[in-house]
Length: 227
Picture 1 (cartoon, one colour):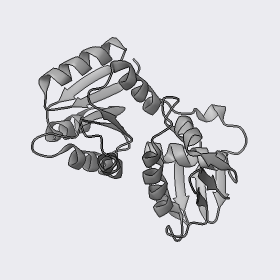
Picture 2 (cartoon, helix red, strand yellow; picture 1 turned 45 degrees about the vertical axis):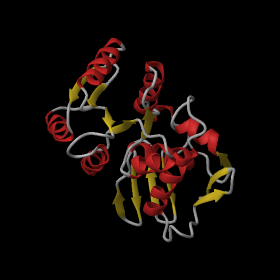
Picture 3 (cartoon, one colour; picture 1 turned 120 degrees about the vertical axis):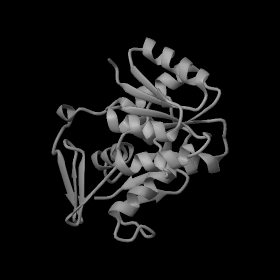
């Protein structure tokens, strides 16, 4: 089995198509027709990723995403017909890891799912597995971060990003290289993803997020992570 996916959409046909296509790819797939039903299924069973429709009656997809993220580090991909940058940022701010526009191709969706289910095994780490600086401790093997003596929760994608920064310190990394390294080879132009996640990381590690000392913006190029 490649992973366990929960499809949340109020349209039965979309749930049926996604369940059939993803099952054929080797995933275990369950579905829910509402946010409330998805909460119950997430409590009852273990999933690796949620495909979550933005536009649902009752509790919206954004509200559902926020609620799921409060209690879980599961990967979340939002599905929506909205393509404005504002909508993408709203989804990422709500806790989503990615954003896919309807209509989408199944190969595109498969690629996005694979990107979010992959993790770098700790056995492949070269050098130290714990990085310490300015009261911050990043354990690359256990995916744990503490900041000045306090445990700080990172979502999986936030940790993937700080993982990459921490293992490539003191050099400028372009937007495209970061996106392809952290999200996958099919990414490269989604700069708004980096803006949102970098801001989230700064709020967690920087003494003054508005004047960062470690996670530095290189205007129109990318970022540098200073140890």
